[in-house]
Length: 131
Image 1 (tube, helix red, strand yellow):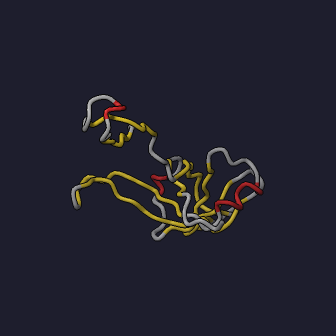
Image 2 (tube, rainbow, N blue to C red):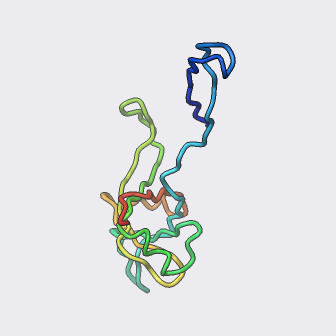
Image 3 (cartoon, rainbow, N blue to C red):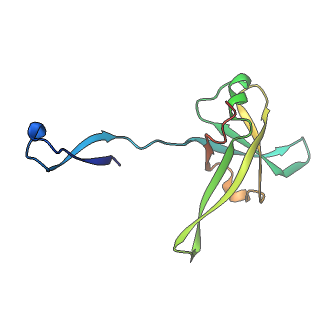
């Protein structure tokens, strides 16, 4: 989508006086990066569903994950029943730690992610800022 700001030029320098010109086309700002849900935190025998492992796109080492600590994560899924005009639902969470050396992070969600979400996509928001 392109957002267009309508500008009204009072003088005749830019065409007909008082005419509305379409100008300043710009792309919308995206406030998230994509992430893939890998599964739950686990050991050899036990898994802990309260913490999920997320791979953020274009993050490939542990040092790069420091920027994302404390950022919010949104898992969006589609339900059968429409509630408040939408079939889309969300589960929000936060990045709480890095996991390993390959750019994977641990996240805790308000409600545990369902098993259906494993292998799916989520959005890692670029807020709140710590800069």
